[in-house]
Image (tube, rainbow, N blue to C red; front, side, top):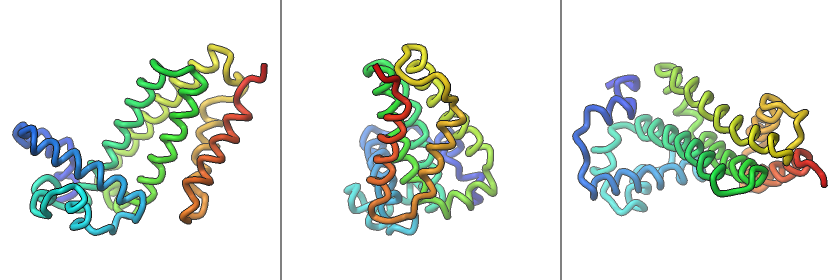
Length: 199
């Protein structure tokens, strides 16, 4: 089976509707895998992922026949979580707070993506459209929150989306050390201090 034929969307379309317990198992595996990839990289033990999810390794392979399949599903889920977070934060928080909290969630997304980098490169060779779609969704969510904050005069209007995206993307270049996430979040705080309109 090629990576292209094992993409989550195709697999989900061909798989019968899961029972509630099977759906819970699948969702738990994705959740545990995302954290494991962010913490330990993509070579983390699949047996450990299954154990922490409370299922057997056979259950993991029934849902995700290959490691790359699991990586791609996790990547898509992380993108969906970012998009959902933008909508939720927009409804529930002040516009500048929503932007800051979304940027911090973007750090978590980068941590997961960083841990899956080697497998994502393999997947990209057969499914480049997935990455173009993902980047488009991120830009759309980011633009929504930035525009709302600027329209309410909470964020400087002389900063464009591309400027801020470049600043955010530079966080990815921070050396991969145990302090990476803390350093990234400090930089988000620094960015927001410069972005907020002073009273």
